[in-house]
Length: 454
Image (cartoon, rainbow, N blue to C red; front, top):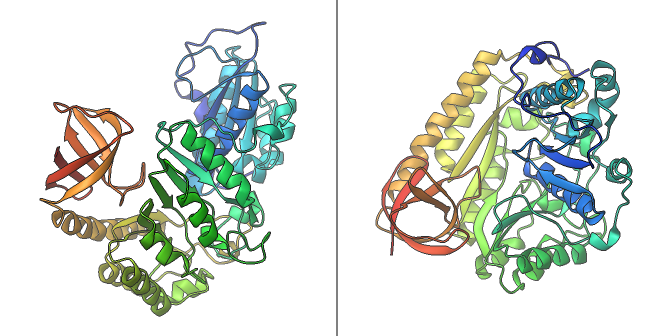
């Protein structure tokens, strides 16, 4: 059983499924519930596509109450995500016990890692599946894996953007990360399959494709015996109608510098790179087994910015790794202040069993982890505000995602969905969702920009 997780309190909480009706002998209708990252979302979209391709009625994150089978795609990355997954399973287990649903299946990372223990604790779940067991899950619906659907995928995001997973798993030895335990070793998707999937996405109205993997930079080395991210970018950028290609999760050690001129020269590849660095402390980089020093990290960032002066860099840091001292934290703060990242997020360290860091004492108190994370984000908020202030009076191409609270809300090339800054334009103007428009920035906050249509 996952440590430090609670299976005893959730059943006493109000059940948001209480309005559901017993389904009896009604035909199977599946609702897929997704927790965790964009890679999980893609897996759920593939499941949705396969079910519908087998004539099984299926929805994703349905808000109505007519599904009688629930599939929960879980996250097991850090303790908070694991607890959310368990809480969700327990809510639907209650719904099954009270006859509101007929079947409950669980898949994804938490299931991959703990399914034997969880099966003993939550017997209401009809079956547990790992991250690579889609065919076995489909059999529960008398469905077969349709290879003719490779390259086709029903998306659940806004119709104009989609995530595209180019590989699975990871070969990196990072001390804190349990991804290899849940997703296995790095396995690249064949380039032809990626291009076909991208073509179909564009054909269905997608204008922005966000490339995701645990490590984009390792792409191709297992099946082509060399890194092929550069070639993949060239082939994708040739697709007619694809306006933006965005890169997420580039590992800094052994960075493929050959992609930089391609990003710079191809107009539909966003000048944007998500490159998780985890810390600015040399001691912590070594403890985390990142394979790089702070000096080499700074040199990498300098090279990227020299090659692509307008690039927006996003990074992620971890606060409170075992043995992180106050001096290490201060070194990270100085690193953030010096590098002035356009976008930055912080996780507090989660002590994950069977990782290398689990052999170390989890000796930074939780309240200290939270304080250090807050320190970093406070610093980043000031940096982001200054960067945004420099944008006042400038005109940007904005892709609009949604309408909310009297504003059309969109993003510039420097912003990824869900995690980055947003541009707000008064809804008194007319904007069509999924379209680009020119916006002149008139005022800013730390993480929001307000503008007028040009």
